[in-house]
Amino acid sequence: MQHKNTKENLTELQAAVVEAYRQQLTAHLPDVEILDVFATDRIIEVRLNDVVMRDYSTLNRTTELAIKVEDRFNVTLLPYVVPHEK
Image 1 (cartoon, rainbow, N blue to C red):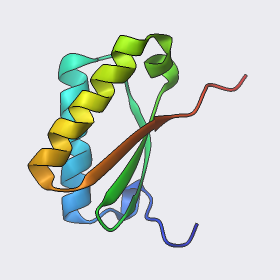
Image 2 (cartoon, rainbow, N blue to C red):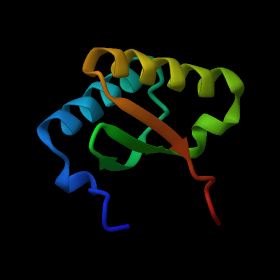
Image 3 (cartoon, rainbow, N blue to C red):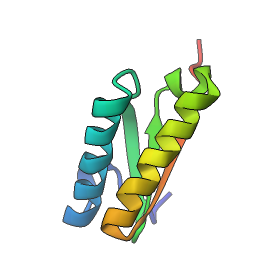
């Protein structure tokens, strides 16, 4: 996808958003990890490890933390999970 930036090519704002979200996850859900990030303008897609899929409360909490970061930076943060493939 040509229109997307990878983690290495994030703008300063996008990198700050990802770092703020990572800090929130580390503080509240230490088992949840950011695996990859793609960004287009003010939309930042964050791929999380599949521990989020284990229960609804973890999924709900990752969304709450994303909204908290969104409000702080005025961006759209889209956390998603790709199930682990064996």
